[in-house]
Length: 590
Image 1 (tube, rainbow, N blue to C red):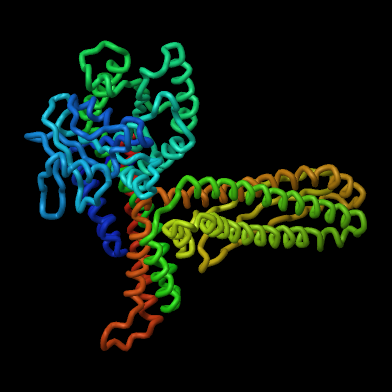
Image 2 (image 1 turned 90 degrees about the vertical axis):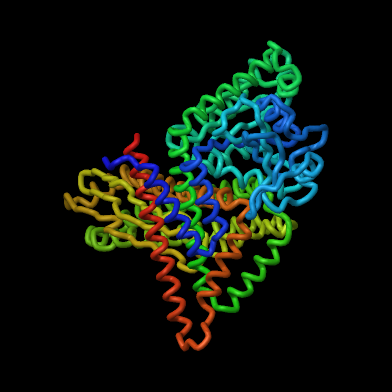
């Protein structure tokens, strides 16, 4: 077991990851990596992200936790931008940019916080109350289902930087399908909740005063059922009445007392920041390494394009960037439906081939002599199975690529959605899968059939294509007796069972591969999120720069291309080594 990873180690890992991001041309990602690392490891500031759908009372709940009406609230959606809430020397509102903090009056702050006007920097509201500790900051976010899709995407974009998630639900309509999807995205973005990631999820069931006491137990049971399937009970529920808690903080009503209990829980978590924040930093760096690995694959594919093709793709992405955003929920639904169709079609093809193969083998056994069975049948079965497997893998690869294109083109009325398609076209890479079917032994009086072998399938890279290697023999036959009759009897008895077992294993592996590929795609969309367009432009720009001839240079395009590809291979090696160090450090601490 290796030594536990230290704060200094994590800081060094953050600088290494930021350096890789810079080399890929992802300057914004590099700044974000360093800023999150400095906040967690340097400032020891715990970030609490308050999220949920519009008009569920997020801003009201923050005000109740603070004990003062710091953020604007009202009957219309009042949060259209991310607002950071911290304790300060005096109450006030600020716009933070590269030049520092500029104070705003409440009248100027309101339109910026509502998203009515674009803020050229980060919005910050400061309070002087003692109810929350100085090392805890709250982030108020736009509604996840805001009619302005960009605002919802902004909320999702803040997820990777969160240490504690406070999901605000409306007690009168708790946990919609959209909210469940948002929780799934949150879990992906933070690397899960619990000891491994350091992240915590607190659920505020707000407006509990509107629900009869007799119905509250059913409500919490519903939450436990739905969220428990995702989180294995690693969440806490607080039944709050935010408006009354702010208006009557001394009330002993249940909803007000629950606001106090939520506040106490946040204070306790802030007191454990020395334990939570290093774990969050490590988990965040792992997620960043995953995102950069995908980004390196995109740039590697771009380097293989002809210069004009690359220029065309770059122009298309830039044009799409000016439009609206990805409709994540619609896209997720389309991907899920198509994934099911692809898997069912593969299952039917496998079953059909297994039946045909079984019928052919038994027919050969009936009409062939012993020498033909021994000399011809094993190689025939091996070749037929190998060719089918290769064809099936290739078919699945093509269908997985078509899945992403078709799903995104269906929702092409908002041009930014096509950026996710570009992620696939530019070389999104799924997992490498090793298929090692177990040996299936057919014991008969005169025949033993063993199905062994190994296939390596590489899904997802449209340029590299498909790599399949069969190590064998895939099927061998051993003659134990000379009686052809006994051999035939044994084959009729045992061959169907053996083929069923072997093809069930092949089917399970292909199904897992499809699941892993789609999961990786969804994961990348969540991690890139509102930076997807900017990242694609940056990656293509860097590839175009690498291929553009420098003034006075006579280097061939192929040499420049090779040099850039070697640089990317080196970056991928650094990412792999960094991920291993982070994983080893977590294992040691466990």
